[in-house]
Amino acid sequence: MIAPVFLVGCPRSGTTLLQRLLDSHPFVAIAPETHFVRRFWIPRVKYGALADETCFRRLVDDVVGMPEFADMKLDPARFHAAAGHGERTVPALFDLLLRSFGDRRRARIVGEKTPNHLLYMPILESFFPGARFVHIIRDPRAVVSSWRTVPWSTGTLGGDAAVWRRYLRTAWKQPPSRGKLHVMRYEALTSDPEHELRRVCDFLGIPFDPSMLSFHQREAETIDFEREPWKRGTALPIQGRAHDKWRRALSPGEVEAIEQVCWAEMVRLGYEPEEHRGPPLLGPARRVMKRLVSRVR
Image (cartoon, rainbow, N blue to C red; front, side, top):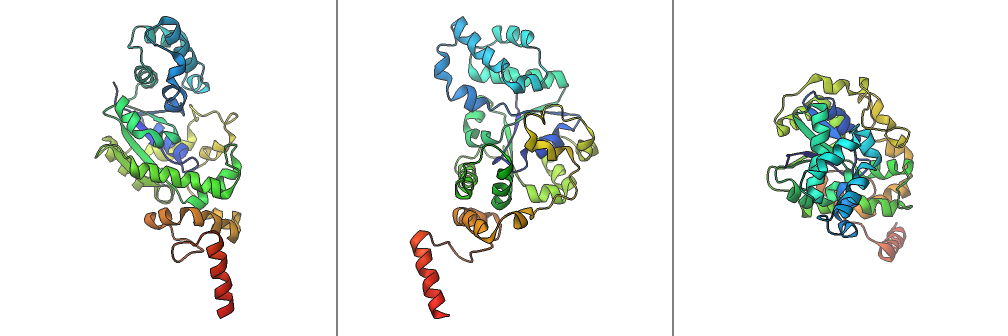
């Protein structure tokens, strides 16, 4: 098995930007979002016994049929042939996919960027004992505000905030092995990209390369902006990205709704809540407290 690096984080936290930056390093190749665990490992029972030729071929057909397989510019016939000569397991097929992509790019380090692989880090580490993970974190108010531009919102601010909270809690509860995880902040990456990229390169054991800072001058080889238009911002230079756009996009009530859900995690991470100076009161208790305060005034 290879030792890939997985870029993970709550969606809209900057994983695509980080992918583009690292993918611009001459030693690195970062594959697009395969959602491999969710697509092929969790529902693996539907494929049956992979020792059976028909069952295994159905799995390989589904891997080759992913839009991201085409984005990786791999040859389907060669992949089928290589899969037929390898171990017939889901982890082995994921290994083949990443190795094939890395070989095509002649990369020293191959990685993959699926945000929700954050939820499955122990599984991925069982697949790839040498795997490493880069977890990028962003202010939940910015994340939830950004979700208004994508098709996978839960439909409510509170629901979207709960997704952010679940990602953080899962990452803290089920971390990979010691020394296998690098955590970074979106705000730090966009404020001082060279410093943060040097830290990531140290973690990966490669020298910093200035070409990463010119990522926007390269074609986004593994991103289809027509299929995923919400990623178009990564075609622009990193400078000038406002960290507090959410302040203009969200009303005070909307900010409060997000902070009600994420308060504890925000405080732990150092994101200062706007509306609370202590643990939030929920539901009727909060309304009663507001009435009592108004009477005192």
